[in-house]
Image 1: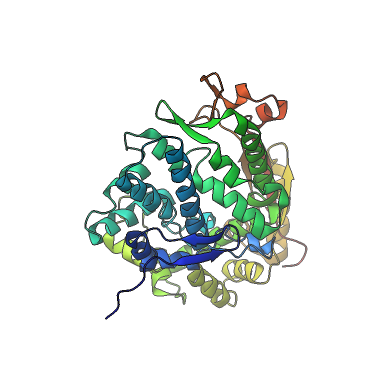
Image 2: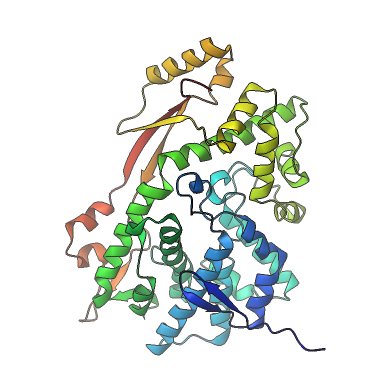
Length: 409
């Protein structure tokens, strides 16, 4: 029988043709854990704002791997030694870096399971795959955890200028149609180098880095923290919270077996074992959407209305303010809801609430982006750049919001 050709090519709308470099990467892509990413939205519920934002974590993972291939080739061309096993480790780590995302990506990161991040779940997946692939992922796991002695490799996976960000900014900009977020990832990668075992950007690439940071700030305010997407995500987390409350009261809710498991059991980082991982691997966006469609007709006032709002995109009103929300404002809207529908104070809190969002374009205290000057010296991008607005990006900006029902529910 002829052997399966594992050196396939993907046609990506962003980069064109993406090649699978070896059989290990092919087998990982083919694995059911990775194929699940086809059913996990890259941008959560942002498609309620930007109709084109229906791309998935599968797209993003392949794109990140493609950029990593380019980065490895660039660094090798510049004399940086990267062994074949290190190359496989880098490609595997970036391919699987988001494999632990739950339904709608970040939207419900701490709702399905408590006190455990998607990075930790990704590590669980990688360790399980490592058993299945006879230790082939050991080096990749070391790089992913930031423990590998060659630090620039860890920076390629996770830093303020990693292959993850280089792909998602360009990809999310493309699918949302927000041109301000478009970055020249290829140009940035071409300017990469390694100095003293740290990832640096050559001086002639400084303006590309500035554009990258400014674009990231725009994307956060205009897309990732868009008020409509924000309130939609809040509603989904509240749906799951209410569902758990009702189940604890003995109410039967129809949903998939995978979703039911996490609603019934309070899973956290300590109880997240291999059996839980196997069930988590069956959970995706479709479980949530199916439940929302079913529960919108439930006779519970809170659950039915919350689900109806999301399914029919008739969301709560949300307003941003520069100062913390006053308790009097919350009370005004809460009392109005209670008087109109006769709901309890606790039930009203599902529809009237406040919160805050924070945006910091650049963090100069955590793994700064270093510029390699022609003189051989290394400078933080803030000191090397001549644009004043770049310094402003390092200052965190916090905005406060209040959510409450429109006149008619």
